[in-house]
Amino acid sequence: MADNTLTPKHIEIAETFVRLYVFLTQYIDRCEDEAARKEYPEAELQKHLGETRAKMMEILKVNPVVKGKVEKECERVLALGSKCLMGGTEKVAALDVLGAERVILKNKTIALSDLLAVYRAL
Image (cartoon, rainbow, N blue to C red; front, side):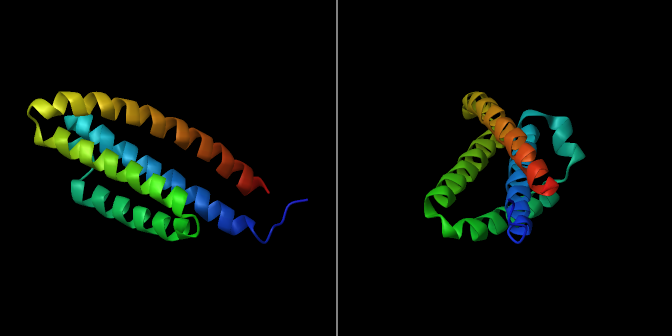
């Protein structure tokens, strides 16, 4: 039997994870594609990413291990993206790694979206 009193919190956690991974994926897309950079203003993306990241870290304070993993993941993607946007020789290597990160984020987003759908159905 489902405990409906926990459902809103579960939904909030899953939604925040999905939003975080969507914003990180959009950040990667901007690194890989000039048109994506023009389509979505940098300041707006950074604002949404920062707010979502802060909310996720607040939620995850109850589990330092997961919080550390998510924080490292964010830092890794942002550092690689920064290298890409600066150009130069580091850009090619960073783009390869970002491609792999994008696949990981896509898979996590799909799994979390499915989980979110189940939570919403409860």
